[in-house]
Image 1 (spheres, rainbow, N blue to C red):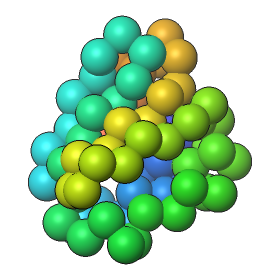
Image 2: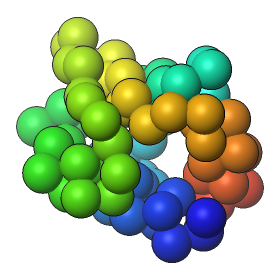
Image 3: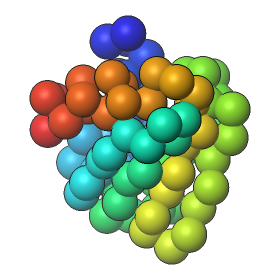
Image 4: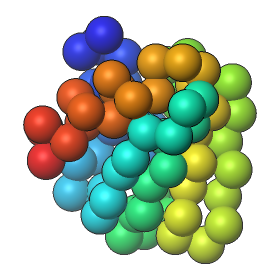
Amino acid sequence: MTDKAENIVAGLGGIDNIIEIEGCITRLRTEVEDPSLIDETALKAAGAHGVVKMGTAIQVVIGTDADPIAAEIEDMM
């Protein structure tokens, strides 16, 4: 699962672009510094079913792996 977490981080514009992240049942809810760095194609290639953008708040729909992936990303931060 570490590869998936790393690919999601890359799709979110890198670890330095992520301000906050948390898992929520089937989604990663994240706050980013610069939303223009979000690469939806990369996120979908990493397994995301969808991406919801609301300003600097980004939700990545990834299924039931959301909590463990959020924990891995938090460990990287």
